[in-house]
Length: 378
Image 1 (tube, rainbow, N blue to C red):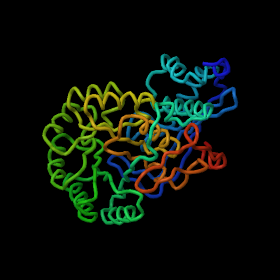
Image 2: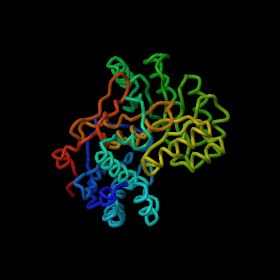
Image 3: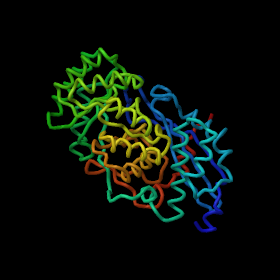
Image 4: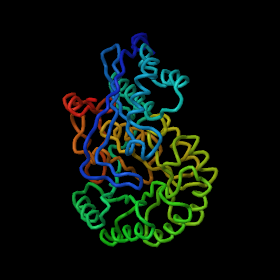
């Protein structure tokens, strides 16, 4: 590395909470989202380059143990003081030094790594995926979640998106009602969209194992691509029993975070597919590592989302494109769920896919006026 690059230091790190409205209520088993809170991270370096990153969660603390507010606190109070003055170009070594003093906090770490990689990509004139090994892909297929809670409305929405050539694969959020009502809801959408339209369901851990036995037997008859996390992610033995009993593939989400989890899931047979998420893994490199372990173990890979905005979704797209093939597709639709965003040009979706930006770093630029407008004032 040249002396000029070695001399580039991290000068400032800012974490901003941003509250954005959604286009409609997003109904999951554990909560209903009417907006999304993002943590936007800005890392300013001594060479004048600023990198941006993002993290978020689903429904505050409804989905998992980390929240946007907690991520901001961890960055402000613990991570930034350790990183300021450190080398901005040796990204993994710098983060490893910080990581030895900051346990957990995978969401905050993912946002900071994204910002440092964005800055490094700008510095070298390369997109982030090139820093991760490169890709020959220009886009990634993206499904859409039908989660209004009303079957007729979901069918209308799905048919419209197919006609627009925006999405042709759909996920259904279930688990808020009884198993019988959930199955009837899925059956109604299957009938309305037709047998040729691929459908998945996500239960978000809402069922007991006994309920999952009942529900998955009925869902398998309807004909689905996969069933995502029907029971508690901590119950890997139960997941293994379901995976062994049913032919419909089982995907781990809440029960899977990183490479170590991938190894254990493969050994126990607790899932057929892994939902990769940069916030849960702790960053882009950690996600790539988990993907390689999963691929080596014969597990299917799926590009998941924490319903990030444009910055987090495009960061995910870079690592998904550079890593092993996401044979089960991706769900990087987060920006489309938001009425507005805080980047100058929002990601492009066409021909059923998210288009990968071609510019250096993330390939995105902040809209500072929008950031000022939506940032949390209190």
